[in-house]
Amino acid sequence: MSLAEEVAAFHIGRPDPPAMLGEFRRTAVLIPAVNDSLLSADMDGIRWLYAFTDEEALTRFAAARDDGPGADWEYVTCTGARLLDVLIPGMDSPTGIALDAGGEHGMLFPPVAGIVPDAAALDIQDTLPGGKQ
Image 1 (tube, one colour):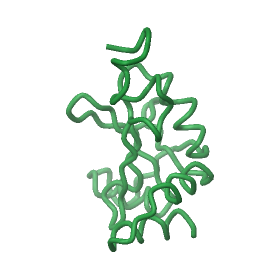
Image 2 (cartoon, one colour; image 1 turned 30 degrees about the horizontal axis):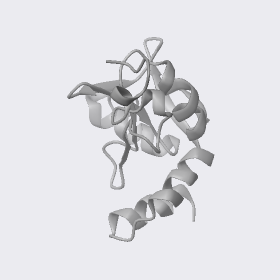
Image 3 (cartoon, one colour; image 1 turned 60 degrees about the vertical axis):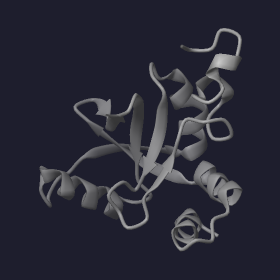
Image 4 (tube, helix red, strand yellow; image 1 turned 90 degrees about the horizontal axis):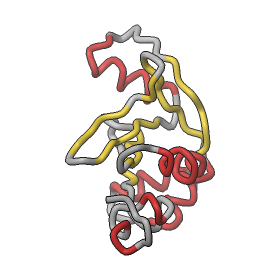
């Protein structure tokens, strides 16, 4: 199944987390860049980096944020694997991915073991030598 199909299956109660994560890792997603920064939100000590499966989902999100229906955000494209394995470990705070935020089938990929590298995972940082505090 595609990433969209895996997420939809999750929302109707037929989740397959390993398959969904695998599809996310293989799929190219759009990350909005506003004012030369990747768009994110902070909640409860976690930074959530916004990522979208297509331009339509990104445009809906921009319009819902009062940037107007004609909002024309720039974005970068990369695979989910690159986000999880390269970008997130380089962030200065715990970071997860908010996929298609504000949409009917949004999904969160939190910074935990099995999703992000162990060194960036909140649930095992205290057990790693030199883990972030």
